Length: 289
Image (cartoon, rainbow, N blue to C red; front, side, top):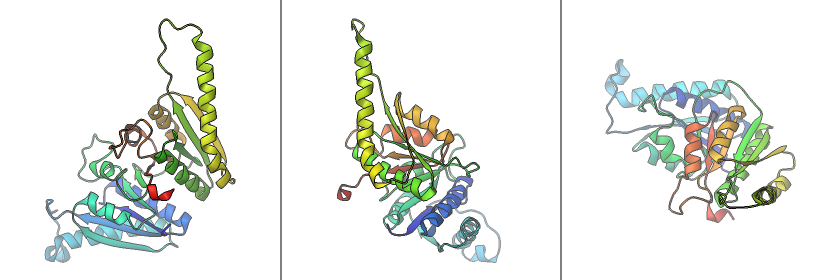
């Protein structure tokens, strides 16, 4: 833990929501907050007015944007250290670099350059699963607190990292943890006889696996109230539904069914698009064993 949370902003509504979320999360941890705006020099410059902008339109616009973001953050968490930084380069690459020195990187779901119909923009997709630490994607301001953190897990190393992060977030928030273990029914043969007892046995086996996987985290976080949700259904549907009554959904960047070369798995990708609350994508790092 470095005691630092980094949030990227471009002045869009999702980015502003991300700044506010990051400030509150930093306050819970007693961490510092760094607000970063990345200017891509090849992008079209905005038409700005005013003496400062006329002398240096990029810096003038960025300074105002960062000052506004810092003001929003201080309104949510007045006691934490807040700094701002203007970086130049490719947005995804520069924010990945910033994540190397942070406990978490927070971004909005879609920036000012995104298409209105898209739920998740290219920056969120480019960072989720690629950044050094957890990436939290925030879509909108938080209007209701449910007191629940949802974690999806399947036994993969990435989902174990997600469980660790989810338990720590639940502890810091004083929230319940809903641990979701979703498995899918094997396709039966049309000629199978006595299939029902087999399914009952399969469900019992899956439930035992889920409880075994959760046991070490229960021991490390005895103060966290855990609700086990062992469901025979597609994990995307289960996690998306659970997100309606959650403050945060946590997933690993890749699960058991993913290709080894895929940085972001299909489940985490789909949850990022369909969740109704902020989503944290957590990578497994081999040196964390």
